[in-house]
Structures are given as C-alpha cells and as structure tokens.
Image (cartoon, rainbow over all chains, first blue to last red; front, side, top):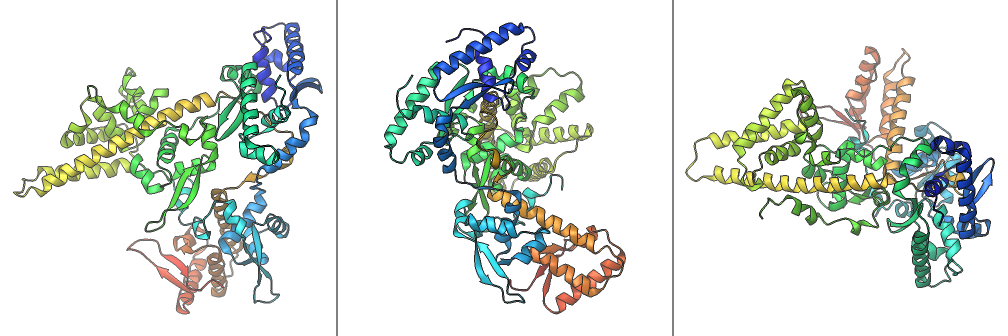
Length: 180
Length: 180
Length: 256
C-alpha cells in the first residue's frame, strides 16, 4: 500500500470525478502542497492502482486522469445494465401515459387536446414498452383507435389493479403547493 | 489478486452500477453460474477489495452491494467538487419518514395521528425525493392510499435493508423514567 | 444541532434575550404533541402522573407567549388548545354522583399519555435517521456513468410521478381554456362547451374556479346561464355539502 497522506483522498476524488481529474484541480484542493509532490503522488498511485486492479484502471485522458472499467468487461457490463427493468420514461411519455391511465379508454385526439401537443410518437413508445394497448375503435366520425393501459402497466407501477391508482382529488392535499 | 474468472467483471459492474448491485441481477447476467458460486465470488471480492482499499469501499446497502468513498475523505471531495454540504431532510420529514418506516403500510390520517400535525406537504416532499412510495389502498371504508418506504430510503440512510433498522422498542427504553 | 430532533437543544441553550430564546424554541416544536412533551419533560415528572389541569395551563400560557411575540400559531396547536380547554371546563363542573365525567376525563388522560409516549418513540427514531443521514451524506457514489448517457433525460416513473404529471396537465389545460375565453363576445353556447371541456379532464369543477379566472362580469353571467342550462338537461349536477361551502359541478354523463 502506498503510504502518502494524499493517496487515499486523491483516489476518492478520481472515483467521484465526472470529468478527468487534472493536476490544476488538485492544486486548488491542496494549495499548500508543492505541485511536484502532487504530480509524484498522482503518478505513483496511478501506477500502483493499475498494477493491482484488473477490473478498473486509471487512464490519462485529455489532460487529466480518469477511472474507468477495462474494455474487456464491457460486454458483461452492458448485459448487467440491460437487466434493469426500464421503468424509465421521458417526460412526454409519462404525460401521455398519465392521460391514458386516468382517461381510458381514450383516443389520440382526446390525448392531444389535454396535453396540448402532438402525442403520436409517444403512443408508439408506450405501445412498444407494452404499457398501453389498443382497445378497438370509438364509434364516432373517423372511428379513431382507443387506448388503455396494458397488464404490464399495473405490474410496472406496483398496482394491484387500476382502482389502486390515486385520484386527483385524493392527492389534492399532497399535490397543491404548500400554503393553499 | 483473486483468481476467479468472474471477479473482475463483477468488480467492473459494481463500479458502473448507480444502484446497489443485487445477486438477482448477477444471476441474470450469468444464468449458467450456480447462485452459490456467484454469492461466494461476490463476498470474497468485497472482503478482498475492502481490505485493499482505503479510499473506496463496497458496502451492503438496500439489498445489494454498492461502491462508495469512505466518509473520512468527504472534506477533500467536497472541496474538489466545489459543492456545499447537501441539504438535510427537515425535522418534519425525518419524523414522517420514521412513522412510515416503522408503521408501513400506513395511511396519511394514521401518520397525522402519531405526529399530531398536518403531514400532507411533507408526504409530497418525500414522494418527490422518492424516499417513499404509494402502496395501493387499505381495505377499510374510504379505501385510503397507503404509503411505504421506497428503495432510495435504505440508500439514503445506509441501511442493508429494512430489517437493519433498530426495533421501535429500542427507542422505548430511552424514555422509561429513571429507576424503572 | 443533532440533538434538535429530541427538542432538547433549545432548553439547555442559555437564554440571551426573551425573544431569541423563544425563537429557538418555536423552531423545535413541530406540533402540539411536541410542545406537550416538552412541558412534561421540562418538569421531570413521570409522564404517567401528569395533571391535566396543570398541563393545560402551561400549554395555554405558552400559546399566549407565542401570540405576544407575534408568532402565528399553527392551527394544529389551536385544535389541541380547544380540546384541553374543553376537558378542563368539564373537570371544573361539580362532580356528578355517578362520576361518569370523571371516568371520561381519566380515559382522555390515559389516551393522551399513550399518544405522547408513542409520539416520543418516533421522535427518537427520527433522531436515529438524522444521525444515519449525516454519515451517509459524507460518502459519495460514483459520478456520472459513461454507460447511461442516453438515459439521462428519462425519469424512473412512480405512481406519484404519474398523478403529478396528470395534475400539472389538468392545471395547464385549465389555463389554456381561460386564455381562450378572454375575448369579449361570449355566448351561453361557448360557456357550455367550456364547462364540458373542463369536465372531460376533471371529476368535478368547483364553482369558485370561475371567479378565479378573472374574467368580466359578462363571462360570469353567461357561465351561470350555461350551468343552469346544463343542469336542466341533466348533463351536470350541482352539489353543495353545507351552507357557505363551495359548489361542486359534476357531470351526470356516463363515460362513453
């Protein structure tokens, strides 16, 4: 193990850094330490760290140092990141889903009236994610397709059934800004 | 260095994971490896890593494993990131969280009964911070919404899982009058 | 400041001036139960032996003090004050032979003690959370993830996100309708359409909503006609739960 006092804090900084850590930044954190000493500490710890680890390495990138995984593990990492159920939605998709959840069965023109923006492409995304489904056509002029939430919707949001969805009125107290 | 084949890729996954890495996720990535072997590899590498590093550690949090910096470096990191100490939760929020954590699933009126104050806006804050979540409805008249802690609760407070919380009775002892 | 959660910090702090000392206290009391606990703990009496009369006096004196300091006393404090005064007034009445009142009062006292003890447990639990949070705020996970760049704008949606999104849309929708109706030529038919559109996104409209729209008197008159017309043809229902309460406008039409 390296014994230098600054080794561990600098390693911790490398770990949290979103951009490559530069010597200049280190000098700002440790203004009393001579720059050469900082450089030496950094070089030593990088050499030591890279000799020790086979999974994570510190590389010199665009004028600084950056901790990254080694390329040989990228496939496993991708496969791990794909295991995460993507409950993640864009704001537009979330809005469209909300209208469908609360107003189903509902047509695209009705969704657009409430949202005030074109919603065709978000409908497609939600259909692909199997969060919504088509429910036949509405018996009005043009016979537009009606949409409703699919089975995965309840699973996704941990609802036993649709009646578990809180109503706007119930959430009034929680949703209105404080002081009202 | 540990010699097992999966040690390095798993370490790399721990490094990129933004949420605690769970055994279940590992099983999805390596469906052919027996779960016990995965668990052993994980436990060994965590022990090994923690003995080696003094800057970064792997901890059991919220049902998984998570890499973080050690608390002793927080001042240097803050100075590097140029961030102010993060805002802590308000007293009202902590109290409401405590009630929800120990009484879940719990309704808003039940929370207010224990706290003796209106708690609607606190619930909103906690929902926004994703520290709590709705958990369907209670099977009583009016079917009120019930709340429980969300995954981020355990992360925020560094708990292995909910069973890691001290029991409520432990807080009772503190208040027995002296001599009893 | 860690001890603030227990409500003890302000008590041990040396009082500088009255104002300063009390402003410290006021921050601590989250609600009436907090204040009652403080009053009891301050006297170091066994909580099971509290006297209702005494604690009521102290509680009211404290609220007086807050008033003197021009501090707005939150409603929760006043509700408890009213309850305590009510109980105390019954205690002052000449005791009836069957002493049913006595029993009721003793029942109330027991319940209050139970509630205070329960509340105190959670205050200690909150203290524990506070300490854990302090530790956790000094460790960092890794910064941005090179692998999750494309997911940055996405939110991991919860039921709360869903209902919030819907809430915001409904608010926006109402604003849009308000903007559209600002023109001066108004007909009853337009108002009928407006009400129908509002009821499409909401279970009910509150009557006061039309006043909050800040439109001319002519608009309001037309809205009234529209409401009457829709009521007459049984398309909507007007509900008022009690005198002076807001009127709810609900649709009678079945969905689809």
